[in-house]
Length: 333
Image 1 (tube, rainbow, N blue to C red):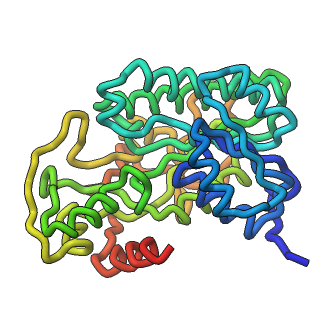
Image 2: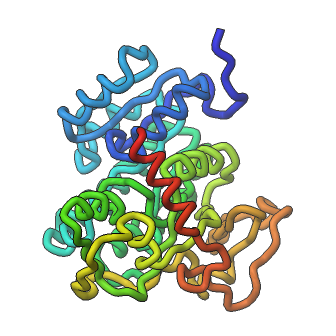
C-alpha cells in the first residue's frame, strides 16, 4: 500500500489549467507520486501535448485530460464541476509574442483568468491559486501588465465570494530553470555552435527550479487564507555567471536589451512592502482590502520600511557550481 504525505490535497479533485506546460508536468508528477489526490484534471489547448503527457504518466486512473481554452467560459465551467482545488497556470508567456499579439495576450491572461474566477465562485471551489511572475511587478511589457491585472482580480475575487467559502491567492516567483522559454535551454542549444547571445552583461535574474516552484505552490495551497501573494526567497544570478556555468568555452555575442526587457527583476516593490510580512523562507504580501484579516499571519514579521526585493540587491546568489548541478539534473531528466 502506497503511503502518501498528510495533506490538504489528499482525496481532492484538482483542476490544473495550462497543465501540459513545464510547471503542469512537474506539479502532476510530484502530486501523483507523493500525495493522494482523487483526480487531477489537465486542462489545456493542445491535444499533442496531452498525448505526450499521457505517455509520460501511463494509465494512472487519477489523471484526466480536458481539451479546452480558458478563453472559453462554458468549457471552463464544465471542467470545474465537482472540483475542489484549482491551480491556474494557463497563460501566454513569451514576452515578444505578447508584444506582437497584445489582444490575444489580454484575452488569455486577463479574460481567461476572469473566467476561471467566475467558474470557481459558481462551483464553490475550496481554493484557487494563480501562478504569477516577477514580470508583474512594475511591468514594462504587456506580458507583465497582464500578469499584474490577473493578480489584482484574483486577489479581489475574495470580495466577490460573499458568504461562499472559495479562497483565492497568488504565488509569484522568478525565472524557472529549464522551463520552456528560459534562457538556459537556449544557451544549451547555442553552445553546440560555439557562440551564445547575451543582451547585457549587467543583467541579473531570480532563479528557481521547477521542483522548488511546485513545492512552494503546494505549501501555499495548504496554508493560504485567501488574498495573499506569496513570494519565495530565492537566489539571483548575473547573466555572465550563467554563461560561465553553461557555456564557459563559447564566444559571447552581445545583442542589446530587447523591447520590454529589464536589466534587473523585482519580486516585491517598495509600495508593496507596506503590506508585506516575512517568514524564514518566504514573503507574504497581504491584501490592502478591508475584508482582509490582519491576524491571518500573526506569526510573521513586517519587512523594513522601503523594503525592495530585487535580483540585483538580493542577499542570496547562486554559485556557478550550484547552477551547473541544476542543469546537470535537468539534462538527466
